[in-house]
Image (cartoon, rainbow, N blue to C red; front, side, top):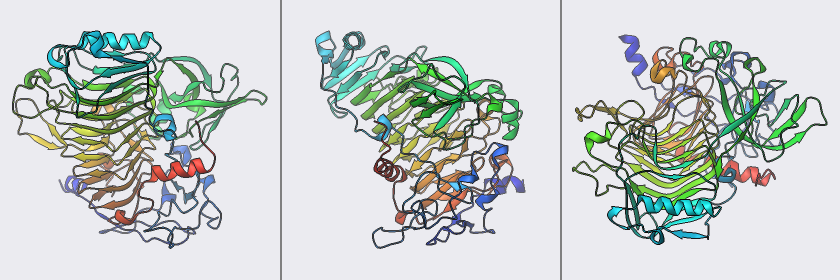
Length: 582
């Protein structure tokens, strides 16, 4: 019992000292203990930890890539020892380093979200009723079909309220569903039958993978060039997945034997990328990727490239209020339904979307959604911004009440968005393969899990979190939570999720909630305000196998952390280096 209480107790870390140089490892201390293990104690590359210590530049602090902590008159506040003025990718201090997260979002974050001007297909011209009196779903779907047949266009939903008794599906590129603003256009769905694992408004590609091109050498974290014997089938602009098999050796390296059994011997697309260059004049052939590798991909585990085709692109949903609320009992008959889904897409977006309580609500609970809000799965370079989802009915187990969900996707940006009263307001979920995603200025409020539909009073804290296997190098940036964020060893939960997180960064987190960071290898907590921080490794329960303790710096000093947003500063710096991708 004593060990259980210790494991559950909050261990609040105190600010580390900030220094003007990077000649020594940064320090981070626990208020009730000796200083945490140095980042140099992190697992070696042989144990599956991706840090390549040969990149350590801590001994060149006077170079352009580091050496100035940023504590000068031109910059307010303090800089992280891992992000000095003049930082460039690969800068490390005793093995601890920050990934470059600036590639997240539509067009790698480099272009503003587009405002398509035409052709415009008004749902009213196809017979849609914008009074909510009759089912508008067939007319809206006909409008979508017309836009697809034309090679793309804007599906316009003029101001009003539209009732939809079925699903809406967009299955082609260049289609944007656009209302007259979330305050003016309302779209509500009434279908609940057979909605498990489906979205009411769904953008759906048809992803296919090509031949397996085995790597001839291991790909290390931060690499952008990989090598295969024959890359003649690839060309610049091709979409590829870099992945590997979850072998018994990989599983054992991570201490997950007997846990990651659901994925044993399956090849997983870990990193979704675009080819920038192919050099067949060298042997083996060299393939340059648009975004760095986030984690070591070993030939031992069958690391390879596979071309991906069939993703739809340049699609979006803008300016809508949406609702999927049904009767309380009906909402609990399905699992994992979502209001909006982006599946097998790239370079898509959602902007100015909110949930609301529709006329289909039949009680006084004030719910907006049956279960989920938005899900992004098997996708890359998607932006979700200026969006609020709240008040789902079904917050029981089985994947319900997830308001902003990302799964098996790369470089997704969720920004300036609020999740409220979900089981998990913001969540990475299910399987390997989520990396490089950024949650920027998100607000997670009042998360609460429920036991069942019949016992509504039995609830407990529902945190935003990394929920499934080994989410790699994601960033929680300048965000707020009054409930919590978590990355930990979930052991056998959720079909053997095990270690849910590695190399993820919590940067400038505030809001009064709690942060639990028990990440495999190293995770990072840099700059917090009014956050209870749990990092002490007790090596039992959700911290088992997560030693060394995650890197902490600037606890309770987030208000003066500079830059306040790591993602936005890294994007500015990358473009200044001439590394634009678009």
